[in-house]
Image (cartoon, rainbow, N blue to C red; front, side):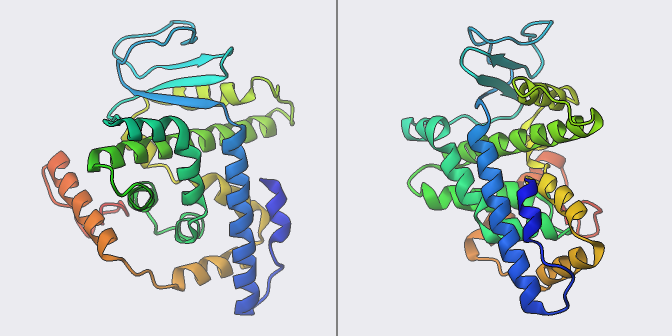
Length: 276
């Protein structure tokens, strides 16, 4: 993703210069994220305890009942992930989307300017506003005839694919830096995924709680000097965000779900930006 850092303008007070730098940067980030998705191995997600897939290596201990497993097939160049809480598609069309069209869904998401702006430059944006609300809207708009359950299944599969790829790429970059740039290209992504998976048992709530653009922000923070970064953050934060009726309804649904899962309503004074 380093190639987009040259697009950042030097410190300048003019709003139009900052705006141009933001637009150029967002386009370059989207292109870079999509390239990473194209180059990444294929992912297959199933609920926890779905059982092992033939031909997949699940690590030294093999497939273990009772935990969210991750396997890799070197022959197919494909991962099998088990995610606790994952919703499965119920119709042939939704299953087809999860198997064949996820990159198209992800492309629409990373090219969604409000998602990019808020995800990279607005620290007050909760990850769930991106992973649940924005991605959810994109899925509903693309597949209006599918059921709510299938919408949620596609959303979860798409955001899981994007976030696992980004977290693995982030670990690869950190490993290369710590090892002085030495990295085995043939195994680096697999190793990065396994390190990410070893942190804790993976579930869909954890996936939703990851900002898909945090790795891009980390690179930008190093590439920009502090003055320019603050200018860009201020320009983005100053833009008023208007909610459509559909988005407001989505927030209301999430609030009801929050109360059902936790036994209380969300609090506006919470330290968690998603809750408030």
